[in-house]
Length: 483
Ligand code: BG6
Image (cartoon, rainbow, N blue to C red; front, side):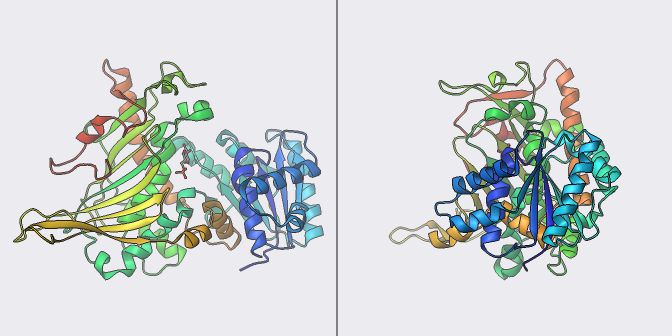
């Protein structure tokens, strides 16, 4: 679908996200004819930029992310961009913004369609939503809003923010973005599960022993210490990305692939999410902080981080559901900064069966999300020259040419917003459950922090996180597959 007339307003138009992700993604959509002549983008931020300067910035952003650029197309694309200096706390600025949006709507025949994008510090999301409402910034056509993460800091603040946003927007028009849902291999989970009898038929607690989700990062918090210290790995990665992946892995099959059916299937699953008690948290969760090396800072020494910080840069834990195809199966996860390498992967570990050959390997299904994209299944067979079982991988991979065609997550998700497809966005009912779980863990940690013995373990950089994460398994025959 193309040619959707719209005036898009980006709050945070001079920021990093807009520069690195949104402008290049919009350009790619433009190049494919997926957005066309009837669109205008207003970038807003406090800085006193001109339209011309914003257009230069858009050009730079595109050049930085593309090897080859058609300069005429870029010039035409950039001419759709306008800048409005805007202080989000100043009510009068919304009046000026509204006027500009209306002018551009007339000029570009945008039919009163508005798309608001919150690409700035999350503490302003509520203020912006409130003023969009009290200054009537919405247009006479469709009105959609894209909200970046984090959506709240806990359930109470998420509820508050949701109230502010729903004052002007219906749930169907709120696109809570999670860039992991735009990743190729995350989008591949459902087709893989539901289109292969081989996989679909073993997707049950009868055959699956456990599932392991690892989102490991090579780098530390870099320049984001200030934000990160108020968040931590649990809120930064688990509340959103890890939970989205787990939901896709554990949900029942939706009745069809309409967005509403998929969200319904997710909700059915999440209603049965087991919220951990403080005792469960003690037993099933590990939190850690990275130490320094010759060339890297320890977390506590990072700029803008409290030297006595208890914030975790690593967390491992366990999730279980009471219902769904893998009810009762432990889903272990871990995520952290300063691992030995960047690696996002999922390991589905199958149970052993008795067999006449003795020691066989478990069949594991591994889905690599980043930096490589592939699925492989470990298979047992016979050794050629000696008795015994040999293990091989059956691999589903992409060619280099295919990989080059994979769009960036933001490109995919922005397109979904334009065509009003909310399949790969977080519904409020899902988010609420994720926060209930996260709040339970955070509360248990807060209590522990006040005790004499808060257990934030320290771990060395360039490794696999703290060794204590090996102790969260339910049985001694379980261990991390990716080591
Ligand atoms: C973001 C987190 O949501 O995801 C970052 O805020 C993290 O801390 C990033 O580095 C990881 O995303 P990706 O796509 O690089 O795995």
